Length: 427
Ligand code: HOZ
Image (spheres, rainbow, N blue to C red):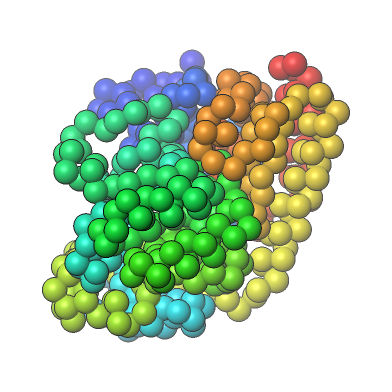
């Protein structure tokens, strides 16, 4: 038994399923999760000391690579000043000003401790602001694990094929309406059927919780128009895309503006941070300015703020990081494309910026149904074959891969070679 196997056995005695977040349990791909010990740059090292090229980047946050020196030093320095005050700090103002400087339609921003908190608070605010109850979300989108989002959700809910989550009341579920991603006509119908009842439409502008799924041309623009006409708050869940696809996130990359934007992952530089922001007219309803209550003992935590600030400021100061990431992801996509073409297996590669996913499918993959009907059993074999060769991919076809900027051309060449060998082994 290797160390990961020993640790997984031990973990299951004290932690539900041996993990603190379900996708990590390798349930759909099978086998034992790899327990990590350390990471530097683009590489992870497991409990046995085996090295992996990392394509998860902690599910997005580690965009600059692991243990990025300026972030590590900043955390060290700030830990010496106290790890928490429960009182405001200047650093929180700097963080808010930095976010506002990168997202022009954000006038006010509230820091929280996770993407889940950011999205659930944004929905509460949209309801409080509009006085309406229902929301529309998209099948296969995942906005964290707050009750109202766990209807036809992506990520772990899709990976574990959970059809309905026990513990969520019918009242809550009934207020969450769903449509297929990229189906604008269905949204129009739903809005008409629920006239003056929809508080918000929440969407991952580029979906990353059912693989990487791009919005089709006109889809986000169409949603924007519906929201404007029907007094609906348009929420972009930029937990994955924020500060990753561009300095101004998906809003900048796709040139569509939301009313409220939620952030997570990159914004914390690997620490637990989320945020939600938008126009003053809406954000001023949040307590203590307004009565829409939202709070958190560790919100704006100084260690989390300095890790996030250092990461985001690095991205703002050097926009070439985005073109480097884009080039690396293109290079990976081209290399994988050649190898997969040669293998004869039907496949689709979806990519946006430094988010990418492979689907073993003979049809376009642009919504949950088309992801789910791909040959995901083959993906599971591919995953294990790559893992054996030292390439760490998301352990589910329902997740996007995230590139980090520490990856070198040599790492990507090794990844392409591992794919060629894996396909030869499996087919
Ligand atoms: N929700 C993330 C994946 N889409 C987190 C997975 C994890 O950390 O296990």
